[in-house]
Image (cartoon, rainbow, N blue to C red; front, side):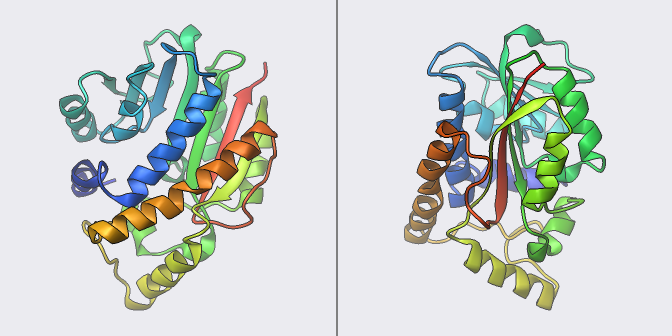
Length: 255
């Protein structure tokens, strides 16, 4: 990602409906995975400007990794209660892995050219029983200049992500599309992106805060999907929504 995009995220991620709803979904799932037990270690890989991992910092020991110096310095200034590190994880990590309960990969894999190798290295570095929560952009039909400007290598299909995960020594506890209720709206927007060769927000993205009313409505619609995802996780269903703007996976290291 470019510095201008990190600057945009830092400015709007506490307020914009997409960031807020996605973060609330992540927190709800993280609380379920940690069993309601406080003071566990959670690692956010590719933490960006820090709002996601900071949302868990009241209950847990939180560590954020990113290779962007700008993102890490911004995160440190905004969320001093979180331990932020500018380095690669797990290759350059010096933290004690024995206490890590959960690893977050929030829209990170699409930025990595060899995603299979990256995930394999990440899983191998974890202890048995560690959860990894993955979110990625979905559906090749939604590819647009927003993806290009963000430095994405791909958008994922559910079967393709499943194939990658099944090659790892993990159990798949959840695998589903999400941000599904708003999919038709986003699909039209992305078609217009391709037609006009431009995005509709700032810094080469579609991110722009709408009116207060619209922002609240969109957040509520998106976050409502959390109840479905929590039920699917409880039932260990490996599939959920049949389509969506994003994909979510929760895996747990077995050996």
